[in-house]
Image (cartoon, rainbow, N blue to C red; front, top):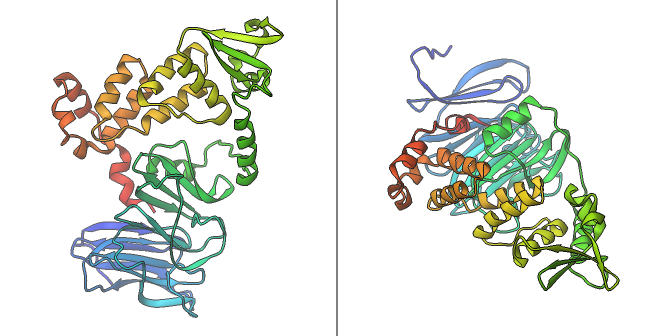
Length: 405
């Protein structure tokens, strides 16, 4: 019998089948599980010679990260969740998981039968069960040894944090974008995709609560080809049925695509004049480059403009009553919010009266308060603005993120 009445628990984690693990302030590790062979259960202590940094557990298996950068696992291994190749489907004593030499692991997280490990460089290593694509490797075979996820984003991006739930995984990038994969809202996503949430806490809460959400499954290859073909038709005078004129410059488009992409053009005929057997729409409120960026977005979904132009496009979005485009502009601006830029972007957002971008700046400050307050830009802030930011409460995920699994 183990007496924990006078112990202070500093970390804890739970998994399936009544599995849980705790770490006390005096570096004692205790775990509870149903014994694999005879169904008996107990609370036991596992001893480690090196300081334990992090703990987690899944369905009847456990993972411990020590200060000397070693990962130890024990318990069930029927799906490779222990990260070692073995004929034994249950291992009672800790075994070391071998990850690429020289890689320093900062955090581990467990799902039902799979494990994520985050390195100091921001790379994610995975192993274990993969029936729902929860390893993010673009296939569904189990992995019995660690493998690094590649190409989470189109450009190399550092991941800052990870979390796992049952057959789902998620991560947050240095640009504060959330990526999910695995079993999400009854869909099986085998490759990380960006989602609308802004924190891992919100993501895991939403997936736990299972809100009234519709997720449409798509076939990536087929969708990619369709989008590519549509994008190629932009500004092609040979196949267009509409000319968009800004002063003397032209953009070639299609009535149906404009009507489909923005309800502002639903009654498109009211904007059209006919000149030399061509249907023409004229605009003059913004520059040619602004209109070009907007109409290219309608065809490609991409915004390839500077930060200043993204703010200018917010005005164009308002003029054309395009809420989806406005949202995309705000998300594109959000990608540039960093420790040194958060206040300059906040000031610009105030000038453009963009409450959404202001909110993004507040959220970034809440999540990175310590680092941002050490920057030169924070020191130069006006006192009233400085007080506004300092008064913001801490984000919930700051307090809870280390308990997520």
